Length: 215
Ligand SMILES: CC(C)(COP(=O)(O)OP(=O)(O)OC[C@H]1O[C@@H](n2cnc3c(N)ncnc32)[C@H](O)[C@@H]1OP(=O)(O)O)[C@@H](O)C(=O)NCCC(=O)NCCS
Image (tube, rainbow, N blue to C red):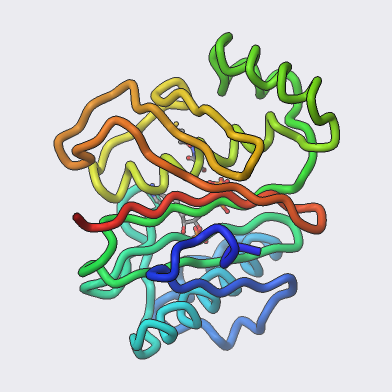
């Protein structure tokens, strides 16, 4: 699923089940020492996917520590992103020679709880979601919006080192499988105010991605 929405210069790996905890590096084990079972499984398989994806760009398996505010610390010369949700885990990576940042996010293909939508979407975005729902009621457009914003953050944070609220970008979703995120906050590290992304719905899951090429 994730590969469908990534450019050829980004490598990815995904799993619909979990791998054993022994696949972790000893250095990574303390990161989940006190975690509940669900969190342990998603972390372990997320790291496994990350190493599979890195292998596809020629990087030998290494520990992937947790950095500032939870962002993975990728091996030197690479950028990437990890996501997991119930029944799905994925990672996407690229050489820093060709990519500035990659952000991916996966969600269950289910409507967002009402109280969540009003906190993550502007009135303008909610109106657009209504219109899309009228045109195609099979797709959970609100969940795509949420996922797209999380992909925005996964690109934004590694580049800027700063928090970005859900109100910090306006996302325009195209029914054809793309979206554009207009950043309402500027940062020299991003050097653009529009992030182009893609989305896909498959087998009960939604995935979104943003891949920023190096100019
Ligand atoms: C960080 C965040 C985006 C993660 O999304 P999520 O749907 O909760 O969870 P996902 O499974 O998709 O992603 C989790 C992975 O994201 C990565 N991640 C966590 N914090 C991160 C950060 N600051 N920057 C980049 N990646 C991060 C990690 O790899 C994590 O998995 P791991 O802990 O097993 O390594 C989310 O929890 C969050 O804080 N969102 C608020 C900020 C935001 O989205 N703003 C919208 C801007 S328009």
